[in-house]
Length: 258
Image (cartoon, rainbow, N blue to C red; front, side, top):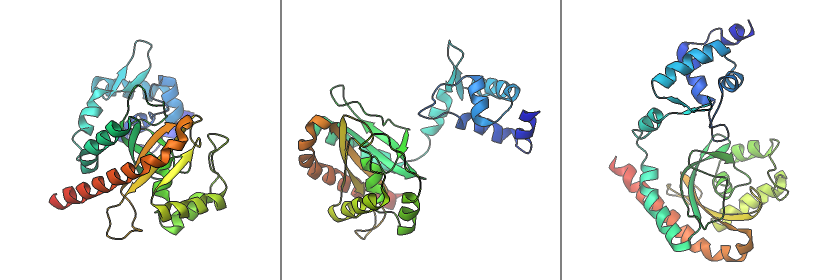
């Protein structure tokens, strides 16, 4: 009965989308019971729709019975035009080749940063971000680089929320964060020191596409190094800023051609 109450008024499409939406970077593999719990759908409904989605290859079931997103959705995703990723990829590879460190590209999506591309190597320090994953804005370099250029009302609203504290070094005090965002705007890049993950620090630069210095960036480019090499971070800022500017120029040209 509870399942029926939760499902009342929901179309078949909305239920199917809810099942797909139950998966994210932190929950890439789910059982039917877990899907039901995350969607509020009855287990019988989840069982039926998951079977149909599996048949259509939108979901794939492993040997242990857990479901994960299927390749059919990946195929469809490739059809979505994204000039940002296309123009940024060569520059991300160049920055990685020059530094040998993890490089990623992120955009703001709601109150989080969404990582849309990443270039990394075996020797680089392990980090949480991966393509398609989301993280809070305030403890990440790319998040700070984006948050600093948001309208004042957005920043005020963001800082008024209870802020996550992934590590003891995460800055969560609104006043201190506001001062740091002002510094990001003044110097044109952001830094973090073990604020998202212990053992790593980062620098990130906004990708500006407007005609004015304070315009909201379309994305941010970040580079992550081991905390043991934090003193080397300043020398990476210039190549980071150069790559961000080149991505911005190529993106503006791509949009103009579209």
